[in-house]
Image (tube, rainbow, N blue to C red; front, side, top):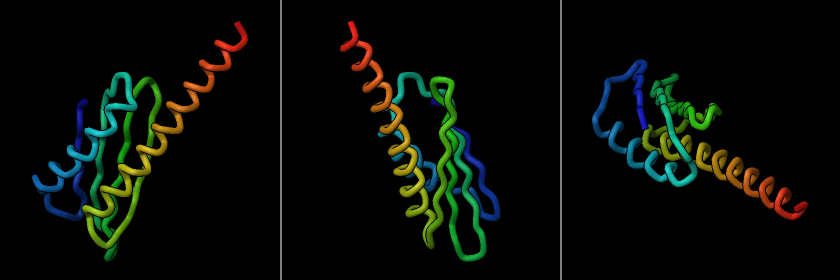
Length: 103
């Protein structure tokens, strides 16, 4: 998985990158072939914002979260992305089940 990081209005941190990569590893079980992930970290007033854009299987998934702490914002954004991937995978599974029942 190719990962890009963008830091706006803050310094780049290896700790944030490491934490993000650890969280993104659990998304691999929902993906057939993950292509690219773009993480954007920025500050808006007193809120830390984490945005995730994942391109996989020809589909783009986007999530973002804001929190008083950047690590909490990362966890929230990845959790939202994980729920989107679960929903998509379940939709594919139901579709395959309907096709099997018709035969």
